[in-house]
Length: 509
Image (cartoon, rainbow, N blue to C red; front, top):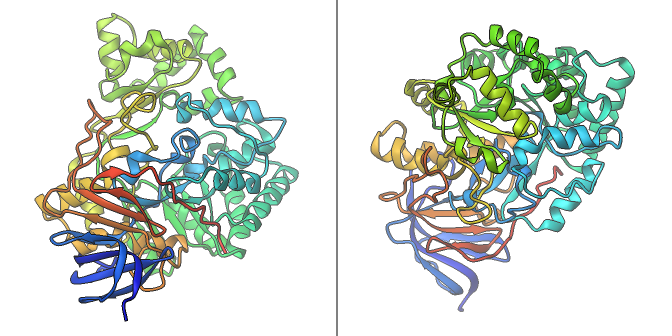
């Protein structure tokens, strides 16, 4: 009997995501699911892919990134699907774009302008459930795992005040968080951004307890108290913890004591953030407009100068500024700009923020040494992530000079650190990109190549895969990603996007 499938992947070298060695087999897809894995499978298909010499892996899962801020304008999320990423974890660092409140709506949107790159975000929602519905209507080009962020939660209730929440405000946050969990958000994130920065640890514990009751997880961009706070929240709320863009210090010890804690890191020694976040945090009390008023004052600038006397200005490169007159500064360091214009770097920074209405992004190059990357890659408690935004290398979406991780994080690991440097085995790198994060995120039917699982599949050439994005020329797709199947549909075909948007919003069930 001739069995008919939608797609047959023939003679590929299957690395199933478990961390086990690869094996030669065929893989068959029908109605969005993997239905057969085996040798010399009989049957026909609408599309047969010859995968001889290619690695067939689960679609990569980027546990930590910020494409929620660009997805409504760039729904195909090309800079990630071309990396083989089929699922993106968003709402990180506390920076989800929902919920919203009428009272503080303007301030929240203003704060996010640097992350949205002047792209259109409709903000036609208030509740987290309404936001998830808008995402589903978008038909995204990747699966979206949507966290609720502490910054948005806190700003919705109390704006950008730099203080502890009152008991009434905390109860209001709890109510919004409970509603978001009921709507299907799988996680709660916090981070080193306003206004979450000013919250007490006790506030985090009380909020995380609600998430724990729903079976969710807690993710954290470390704040003032560092790694110890992550441990304290995990224990106090009895909740699994994921630490964002971290070096892993203390994780093995905390796990040995029974805490479900892991971390993620990107394979670069440079970081990136809001340009205004070079400034001390007290400058942001009251929001972006108040910040702009403060940095117009010479006395305030003098105080900033004193507090930033050790900042390495020559490592802070401008990645994005929206105003036309500021384009000449993109790609240059604040230190170099200051030297060429015979100005103080704090004045340069403040003037650029004023000229660009508080909006801008920078890349902090050479922030760490290469040993940081090697150490995290070798640690089984670490997952690969990008911490990037979704872009495309054509107008109008090739914006500024963002961190090359937006186009290259996953191929960089597979091409440079696995093939060329032999830092970790291929099967372990794939586990860190697939089943590892899926397990932590509570995604039970993705991250492994298993019969009955959703057909999220990345097929690449292990001999040619490599990142091509650089700091000076970041808008470049990688090499070697030949095919990407998303929910059973072919999205990348011989390296080219088919135009199909087959993503789903992965609500917690």
